[in-house]
Structure formats: C-alpha cells, structure tokens
View 1 (tube, rainbow, N blue to C red):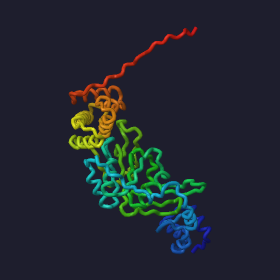
View 2: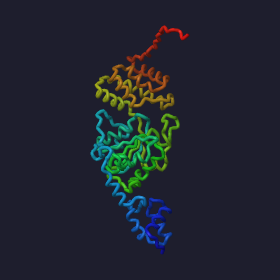
View 3: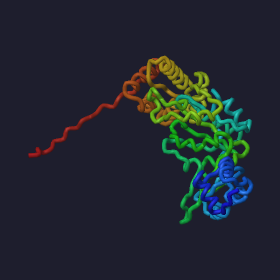
Length: 373
C-alpha cells in the first residue's frame, strides 16, 4: 500500500483529473495507488461539494467566507419580488394552452419545447398559464451572446466588494419557479451549461463550490421559431442548429399554429373593447384578410405572412389614429414595397368601405440663390 501525505494527494488528483472530481475518479486513483477509498475520501472531506463530488479549488472554509460576504446585493433581493405574471383580461386560450397549463399544474419536472411561426402566442400562453395558476415565472430572452454567466450567475462588483449573484436559472431552481427560455434557437453552444438542469438534477456552482437542487415545481419551457435545426428559408436569420443532446432533453415538443379565424376574431374584439374601439366589422375584415394571406403563404404563393401580433398592432394603431387606412399602412411598412402594396390591395378587396391610403406628394421648392462664381 502506498502512503502519501495530504499535499501529495491533492497534487496527484489535480494532475490526473483536474480540480473537479467524481467518485469514479477517486476510485480510479485508489486502484492505481493501492490505497483505500474511505481513507482518501476522509482526507477530501473539506473539499466535498456534494455526494460523490469534490472541488479541490474551493474548501469549506472558503465557501463560508464567500457566503458571509453576500451582504450587499446590487438589487432588490429576489425573495421580496412577486414573480407571478399579471392576468391579461384580453387573453383567449387556444392551441396548446390547455396542455401547457396541465404540465405546469402537475408540478412535475417535464421540460417542454414550443415551436411555431412568429407572433402566434407561444410565450404569451406560458405566461398566462402561470398567471392563472399563480405560479412564479422567470423569463430569459436568449441571444447569441447569452452565456453561463448570464444564465447561472457570477461575481459582481458591489460597493467595492466582489459579491456572487444568482442568475435567472438558479433563482428559478431555488424558488421552484417556471423557467421560460424565450427564442432558444438563437443560442450558441454556450447553452449547454444547462444540460444537468434539463435532466432535473440541479447544478453545481463551481465558482463557489455549492450544489443547487431544484425545488418542487421547477420546470423549463423553451420557445422557438424553429425546431432547433436552423432556418433554411432565411426567414429567421440568426437562428442556430442546436446540439442534438440538448434537444433530446426536452421530452415533448408542441407545434403552435395561428389561432382559427373564430378565435382570432375573439382576440381582436377583446383587445378592441379594452382600447374602447367598438368596430367588430373591422376586426372581422382583418381576420379574413390575414386568413387569405396565410393560406397563400402555406401554398407557397408569397414569402411573407400576417401574424396575430401584427393584427393586434393594427387595432392599437386604429385606437390612436382612428384611420383604418393609415393604421394598416404604418403596420405594413416593415415589409418591402411590393409586399406592402399587395397586402393593401388584398385588404381593399375584403373591405368594400376601405380607402387605400394616399401617398404624400413630394413638394420641391425652388429658391433663388446667387451663382457660385
């Protein structure tokens, strides 16, 4: 049997396995050196991070020192914040809402991926399900720049002192809240830091040597315009091909469609009444118009589509300007001129009372100026 002192033990383990050890690593070391596993683990007691895991960079003494320094939060402590979304009286359930609500109500850990075209209520549905069930929701908008520090947390400089601050993922884990990863297909491979979280196993905070277990009720929802395979048609520039192992950690995927014309009309009428706009006929015409455009889009006749969100934009514009033509036009200005003109002409056909907005004429004034020579 080989005898090694503590310093030599630590140096050997770091050289063989790095600073983070598992039980398998320690057993392998014991076999190679002819020492007993219980003897080595007793010597590693101060480095223990969780059951079967050790971090040789952080001792229990250092952890306690760091925890004692957490006395100067940079913002209002999360425990004092109410993270339950507000109920929206204009919300109309449709699509996968009932199933999403059942998953949240079950309190089971069941990561769920929701995919669908832009502006069809993917995120809004999860928010309102949490509002109705009085469940806390933490929403994270994912971008290509989102990294482990943004999600998990990190050290922040507060009043001249370095303080650890939990990221949104850790807050959701500890509170048993719903974590909503919005636009997940914009993420880079840095999102893989969530692998253990998506397995329901919690996460080890290696910077402070603390293991965070998920509280009861914690769950993850992810929304995306694609299924994590990128966008071949170029409609969703910036979306990425997500790691297959990452996608496999979502047991189910819901495909969110736009609401039916009947439901969509109900949505617009509710929002219109909330804005004190009493024009049910206008709501009906907008829905018919959008339905024709979508059918043409699905048949490959056009490359653009009118979302439910854009119809809501038009209703809001109408409540401000009281002019149908202007409201539709300014909400269509995001499209190229050819598409915008085609959409306006189509609406003119579904609404006999509609007047095409006139384009302002450019007036050129000539001013007499002295010759430059």
